[in-house]
Amino acid sequence: MNISGVPLLAEPSNLSAGSTLTKTDWENITIHEDDVSSFLCQRWISCYMLYDWNLHHANYAYLSNKCDWVQQTYKRLEGTATDAASLKDTLTDTFNRILLEDVEDFIQTHMEVWKCDRLTVEFQVAKVTSEIFSNPKS
Image (tube, rainbow, N blue to C red; front, side, top):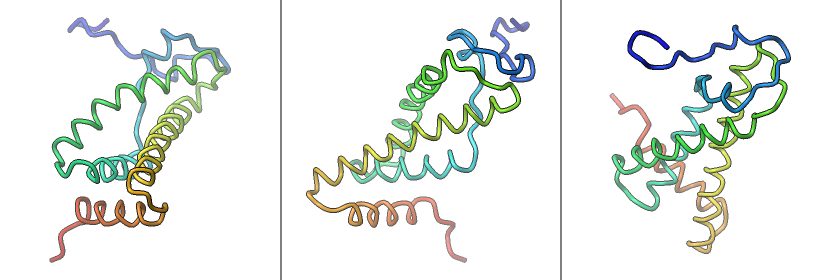
């Protein structure tokens, strides 16, 4: 623990190569998000906003779900032999995969509810993403 009483996180460099991580190990390692995570976040928020056109609600829902996605990431990797050098990428890739699965679930649900094809949903997601996340034109 550090001075503030908050546990210090294990760093991948402290783990031996090819070590098998336990549940406790996973819960003490930070998941670093990348550009793919950001892109998937935008898609998730855009899908959410097709139900509820309130960006505050969408952001709050994303952050609430993020806790679950992080736990799912740790659970999927628990007991796996992970090379310390690739741990950061493995965590990020697994998190992104789980987030992508959730985006896919959103899209499938929209297709069912709207009784439409994937292209219709993808077009609406693209429109929302463009409106919310595009830079304003000068």
